[in-house]
Length: 152
Length: 152
DNA sequence: CAGAGTTCGTTCAGATTTGAACCAGTACTC
DNA sequence: GAGTACTGGTTCAAATCTGAACGAACTCTG
Image (cartoon, rainbow over all chains, first blue to last red):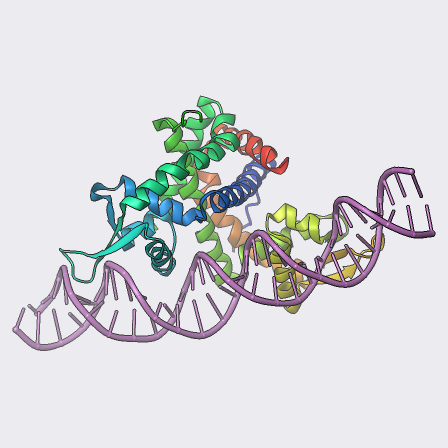
C-alpha cells in the first residue's frame, strides 16, 4: 500500500486543461461536421484514413485501431457510410475472414467538399493559436502517450 | 471562395497525435474507472468537481459546463449517482428553478478510494512521461484553445 | 406590475458506443 | 493432418449522449 501520488498544481493544470480542451474541441468539431455534411467525427476520420490508404482501402480491424473505436462501433459506422454510398465492402483476397472497406468516388468527393470547413475549425481553435514551438512540443508529448497506450 | 488552407506536416502531426491520444487515453481511463469502481469518467469528474466546490455543491448548469457534457447528459448522470447514493439533489435557495447537486459523505468516501488508481493511470500514460517544459507548454497551448471555445 | 425574452432543469426520441457472445477462418503444434 | 488456440468481423443488449421541446421561474423594460 504505497502513498498516493497526487498531482501538484502544475500537473493538475496541465491535466485539467487537456481534458476540458479535448472535450470542448470534440464537441465543436462534431457540431461543425454535422451541420455542414451530416457526418459524425468518426465517420469523417474513417473517410480520411481510407482516402489516404494505399488502394483507398483498409481492413476493418486496422481501421478501427486507427480511428480508435471498438470493432462493433466501426461495423456500425461502415454500415452507415455504406448506406450513404460513401464506402463499400470487399472481401479480403488474402484472408477469407477479412473485410476491406473501400472509399467510393462519392466518398472522395464528399471529403473534398467537407475537409476545408473541418480544417477551418481545427485551425481556428487549435493549430493557428499555437506557436511552432508549442506545436512541436505538443507532438512529442502526445506521441509519448500514444505509443505507451498503443503498446497496451 | 478562398483557397483551402491544408495542414503542413508539422501541423498535421500535431493534430493527429492530439486526436489519437485524447481518444486512447479516454478509453483507458474509462476502462480503469469502470473496473475499479463501476464509475464512468463523466461520473468521476462530477464527483471531483463537487468535492472541490464550496459547500460540496454546484448548480446543474455550471456543473455541466465544467464537465463539458450536455444538460441532459448531466441530468442522466446525476440520476445515476443519486441512485448510487453518492450525490443528492437540493433545491436552490436563491432560485426556485435551480437545482443544486451535493456530494454525499458516501460520495466523498468513494472518491477517496478511487482517486489513487485513477491518478496512477493519468500519471503512467501522460503526466510522468512529460518534462516540466512539455507540461507547461501543453497547459498554455490547451488553455488558449479552451478559452477560445468557452467564449463561444 | 404586465409582458417579452431568458434561463433552468427535465423529458423524450433517436443515434451511437461498448463489451460479450458468437461463428468462420487461420495459424500453430505435435 | 488433427486439434487447439487465436484472430476477424458481426450481432446483440444495455448504457450513454445529444438536441429539441417543454414548463416553470427569473429579469428587464416601460
